[in-house]
Length: 364
Image (cartoon, rainbow, N blue to C red; front, side, top):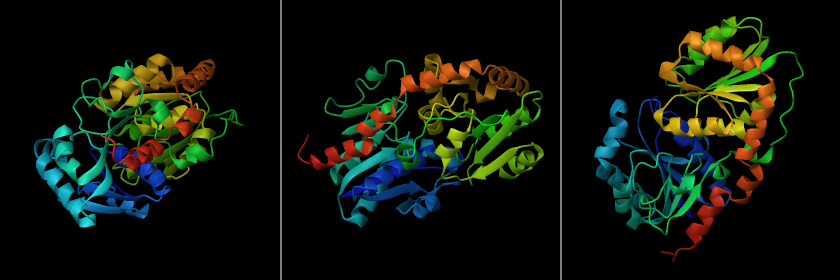
């Protein structure tokens, strides 16, 4: 079986789309599925990283990074035809095309559909129509079940909510109960994704370096594509009991060792929640806003707000208040357990739903 994934990454886009697609690709590989990626050449792309993970990547022609989303939206036919050229290069037809891309909608999907047995969309915006057999939105929202009404055909199978989370193997296989810290210091885990284009890692580090009277130890994680890498390294050396990691493959272990997490509203939000880590979240992109607000209202995270509205003084004040109220941590852990379940995730793995759909070749 052959599956083709169309997704992109860059300094502006970030690494989230590629990382969740890689999680899915690795799980499909366990079913002896041959997975190919199609990515456009953009500044800060993850093409080589995908290749190092063992997948072949077809690279589409380069366009201006700043205008990338607009280019794909306006020149969707060119993007679709380049994708069809890749399918022809592989063998002329594939079992499924998976799309994780905010600028692709039913028009692109309709053109590519004749060249694939099935189509799947990964989305979390619900702002455009899709021509697809499967749609995955792994986030939590108010009114989740009605979110894609009139946006997909009645025959489309919807996989909605965090119990369809694309969890990496390290979380599925080595999950343990979060243990209390064995020191008198609060251990903070700081991670804002692979590229952190808005510079939140540096912002939070500066605020924490000014906090007094709260014993703290820190694990800071950044990706290789973080543009502030050198500045972060310098600041981490100035903070006592602070360790810096780059491009880790043991995220679950680091989360389990932490008392508090600080990060954005992307995939890592759910990784912290599944391990019941009390967390402060900064919204770093518009597509995170609805999710973070809903999960915060449910009680599983503490919402610090949108990144452009967060000053150093505000951030420092909120951090001190949160870190000083340890009695709230247990309530947050309980809320995380009520929001999503590892057992349910294992029972309805996305890759198994994909295999069922692919095997039903005659299904309309």
